[in-house]
Each structure stands twice: as structure tokens, then as C-alpha cells.
Amino acid sequence: KKLTTSLNVIKSKKKKKEILKITENISKFKNPIESQKELLILNKKNKDSSKSVLTNRIKKDFFEGSKSTLAFNPIAKDYEFSFEILKDPTGKIYTNGEYEDFYNLTLDKFNNLRNLMRKRPEVLSANNINSILRLTNKVEVSTIGIVKEIRKTKNGNYFLTLEDTTSLINVIIRKDSENQDNVKIAERTLHDQMIYVKGTYNPGERGKKGIVFCNYISKIDIPRDYEPNKSIDPLSIALISDTHIGSKEFEEKLWNRFTALLNGKIGNKNQRERAGKIKYLIINGDLVDGIGVYPNQKYDLTISDIYEQYKKATEILSEVPDYIKIFYSSGNHEPVRNALPRPAVPKKYSKELRNNGIKCLGNPSVVQTHNVNTLVFHGDSMFDINMLIPGLENNKPVETMKELLKCRHLAPIYGKKTQIAPTNKDWLVIDKIPDIFHTGHLHINGMGSYNKILLTNSGCFQSQTEFMKSLGIQPTPGILSIVDLDTLNGIQLDLKASF
Image (cartoon, rainbow, N blue to C red; front, side, top):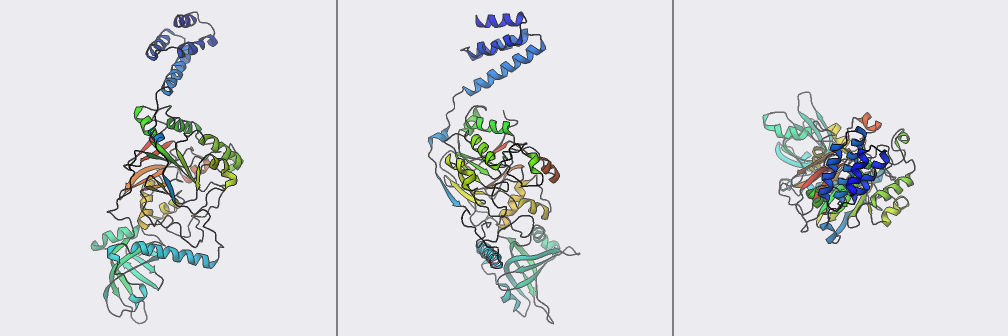
């Protein structure tokens, strides 16, 4: 009877507001299959274009509503939280900025990297540089040191100066058929990295310093036999960054899709099952757009007050189910110092986030969830690395992440655009091998692996700004990284195209 009434309304071509009553009638149908058939009939019989658009909208609203009524039983809800913060610089990074602080930072970096290098079997016999310089005959030697200088000669050879706590020594890597692998490594070696070299030492004559003619070079790297930790529980972790709440370019529609997915309101069966396994969410910096971060930023803001930006952030994060634990690490847009390492966002800004159970962390940090360790680094140094190493590009973040792992440092070169605070401890050394390595900052998604470590750069929830255009950045907003903790398999779910 109700359907007949609705059809008569269309036949008589009454006002559009009467047609809207169809929505109420259809929503009361108890049989969704019959409802679908009736909607198709409506569209077929309705020849008027404006009415066709209207009934298409009704059909869209109905089917979206029917999706939300499907049963959603998230498995993650059945598990208790099991996490530990293994590394967080907050409250431990005070510095006076004096010469002694810079010296202590450099010495701590050297000692930590040397200890990591000495875990490689071939490095155990390495000598300190001063003991090599005292030799008077040609002999095979090996040593480890920080790269003080590296340059390519006009003949294509590489000239390096290595430094340890005892002295300096020069090294030549010749460009010949026997040294091809060594030259490739030298091409991707930067100042301030630690390397191991082996070769023939030629003592100096007539007051000249000796030199090592290298036949083998290596970085600290990740052992090829490394076995990552895995969870016994069938849960997963979602990894995001760079939401930039407060920006005109904040993609709130994509964010709403994200939270709708977490709540089981959208997605096919497979997507909803995967969403139901998410137990943890890591936000790797730039949750808000901040104030005065770059020139003329005020023209790119919809929310120009930092407290209001955090109020909005609290509001939208409240849509995440309460059985999902959220970790929030600071980035370069947060109201904290720009130099690395960064502390967590102060309580005066993040009070409501903390009251809602969100764990605020400094950057970098390491979070253990169900036995799996995730290294969280916003990624500030990645632009520097991409400019200095041939072949690296901003749109291929995984390759840059591999280089950071090879040298076991998150900002291996000092003095470029990445600001590093002179703290007594070098928090940027990758002393413990992570199971998941998570970066952001570039606004470009990427996922891969390196020696069984899952790598992901989590993209953003912000479309291209004028500032990004000036840097040549084409962002990839709305792509969600999800990693299964029991297998370390990862996927990238495109919220723009998947629903």
C-alpha cells in the first residue's frame, strides 16, 4: 500500500518535497531485497531527470544505511591491551647548548655505533686508527670510524677520511673491476656515518700520512639472519600520520571514512574483518597543522588557534572505538621544539587527549604491542638523505628508510636542514632492531620490507598545499597502513578507492 502511494506521487508529478517522503516509506520496508527491486522500478518509471537524480540519491542513502546494519563483531574487542613504551625521550632531553653538550652527543653516538658495528663477526679484529698509523710496513689492516670527509675524485675513485677517538686516517676506494661493490657502497655513504674498512695500509714517507687502500667496506646494517618478534594473538595495528587538523586541506571526509571503517559501518566483508582486528593506532606526528610553522601558513588555516586545533582533534579521535589504544607521537607541526629528539606534546595542549586515554609520546619512540616492537620516527631527516644519496626520491620513501636502517641512525648526517639538539645521549641511534619501522613527514605512502622488518611511510590526511607545491610534493592522502601483529604482513588500504 505504501509503495503504491509512492508511485502515485511520482505519476502525478507533484512537488519534489512530496517525493522526499519516498525515503521514509522505503526505510520502513522489512525486506531489503524487495526494497531494492522497488527502487529500481522507481528509477525506470521516472523519466524526469531531476526526479531521477533524486531517486538515485534515495537509492544511495538506502544502500549506505543497509551497510551499517550488518553485524560487526570486532575480534580486537575480546583482547586486553598489552603494550609497553620501550623508548621515549620526553623529560630526558634537557641541554644547555654548550660545547660540552655537542661533544658528549658526538661521543655517545660514536660509542653506540661502534658497539653495534663490533657485533659483526668480521669487525672483531679491527684496530684503532692510532695503532695503524704507527705501522712502518705495508700490511693488511682493518678499522672502524666515523666518516669525517668523503668525496669523489676526478678519476672516479672515492677518498675518505675516517675518525675515531684516537686519530684520523685517509682511505682510498679505487674504481676498478675488483671494487665495484665497494664503490656502490661509497656512493651511498654520508658524512657522520660509521663504516668498517679493510685493506692495505701504505705508511707515509717523508712526513706524509699513511693511507689505506680499501678492498672491503661495510656499514653496520641489519643482520640477514634477523628474526622479528611476532604476536600469538590475531590482532593488527593501524599506522597513520600527518592529519594536519586545522588546515584548509585537511581531508575530513577521508577521516570520516576511516572512523566509519573502524566502527564497521562501511566496507566489504574482508575489509570489515580486517578492521575488526585493529587493536592499536599510532599517529606519527603532525596531528594538527600548528601555528607559524612555515611562511604565510595563516592563509592555509581554517582553525588559527592551537587550542582549538586540539579541541577539534579530540573531537574526531573520540570516534575511534574505545577498545583501540591510540599512541600519538609529536612531529614538526606540533607545539614542541623543532630539533630532534622531540618531547611529547605538553599537557596544556593535549590534556583532553590524555583524558580520553591517548598515550602521548616524544619522537622518536619505540612502542611494544603484543610482543612486536614498532620504531616510530616522524621522518624529518628523509629530505636530507634523499638530496644527498643518488637514486633516492621523495616518492619512494621505503628506499630511504632502508638507508637509515643500514647506518643504524635516524639522522646520520649532522648540519643539514634537520635540526639535532646536543643532548648527552644520542636518541637517534637505532640500537635495538625494530619489527616494524614507521615514518611519516613526506606525505607519500610506501610499504615494503628489509631483512624481515616491515617498513611503512604512512602518507597523510591532507591534500596538496601551496607550500607542498613549492617543494614538489604530490601527496597521497587517505591511504591507511595496517600490519598484522601475528604475521607482520601489511596492506595499504586506499580510503578513496576501496569503498
